Image (cartoon, rainbow, N blue to C red; front, side):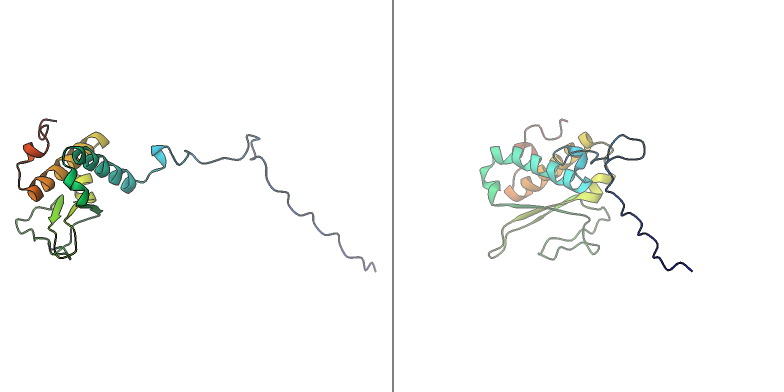
Length: 153
């Protein structure tokens, strides 16, 4: 009988090419390209664009906190003292007034806005309208005073 140990199988080499000889695949798009941004990140960017546009005209908005949430709370109240919505419509945004050491905050609800729009351009317009309406409520002005182009797009 033969008592030899069978040879050890060779360790696999690291793959340098795929089976079709084209090389390993890399990411579909580099991180700086908008395709790599999630829908939520793209939405937040649109809100920031709208706020930046308004802050040039209204510098006091730099003290206001702008946030994005997925959906409004189911009971219509905000944990920070926002008002409730009783008319059955889902709000697209909400103003939470300043209180104590807490700054005023404007909340934009992502999912209701996305449901009402079909394209990125429509979404950007609706976001800007919501931001303008909430800023107008905060400042006690008409939306047309906050942004003269309000409602024209």
